[in-house]
Length: 197
Image 1: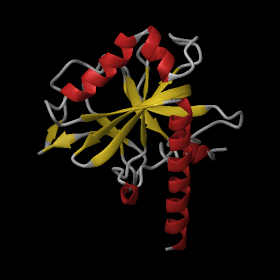
Image 2 (image 1 turned 120 degrees about the vertical axis):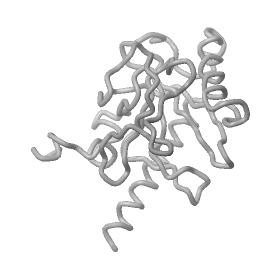
Image 3 (image 1 turned 90 degrees about the vertical axis):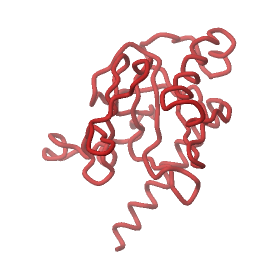
Image 4 (image 1 turned 135 degrees about the vertical axis):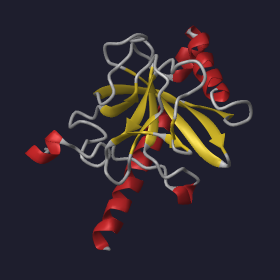
């Protein structure tokens, strides 16, 4: 439960549960579908910021995001395990959501990439009342709607230019869920370490 100050300005990584008491996973939307501004969540302040490169606000000079992009709170892809030190990335195949929305999601799998030697896995999720309600695993999505998965893969492979993102394969629902649970445990370990310092 958030106190009144946290409720007004929650730390978007630390104060929002990664899943509800009913066991439903949650995401925080950073970038709505159909937009091209690169927003992120600051791991220290827990607030959104518009990413910059060399002092210039970052705009994706490519097709707009074809999915909603965000993070699963209370997770971290630990650098000592080959991650980037950020929360677990997640995309939803759904109509555009607003930046800052906290949404219940249904994880169906993940797409694995590597970037500059770091593992960069994107969890693929659906909204409970969104499109593809009858899909339960990414293998089903690949079989029934292969174009949807291809759009995701091609977008990531192309938006930073050829060779920046390298496709490493898919993970099924079980593997993706295990990754989220592992990254949540890594987040808990980090919080414990910070408390002890």
